[in-house]
Image (cartoon, rainbow, N blue to C red):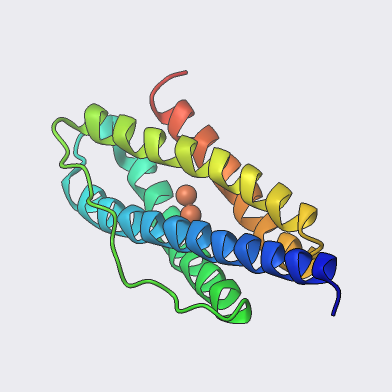
Length: 151
Ligand SMILES: [Fe+2]
Ligand SMILES: [Fe+2]
């Protein structure tokens, strides 16, 4: 092995570790999403939010799928999927709870954009393809919550 190929291999190991760490960060945020939505479907009240709560229940099921996909990618890359849950924000009014959900979805949307690009740049098209549906569904979640908040 030449000196150059050693440093290239070390560099790709570092990138791979960073991707695993970032995916585990995404996973901890999906667990946070699940905790928040479980709380919010039970606490958001008012006739104006009946259909919103139904939508949140759909999100909740999709978040569990997102968490599973992320854990599978971490495993595929040789890492251990985290069991850490990013601390969930406690909600106030129904509107504040929905704003909290929107903030989290918006953060996740940016993270998935970054992650798809990162996997693509690393020459990992399988990982990028696995993550793309998470990006699309998170865009939908952002739109649903914006609509629920009248934006
Ligand atoms: Fe999600
Ligand atoms: Fe979501």
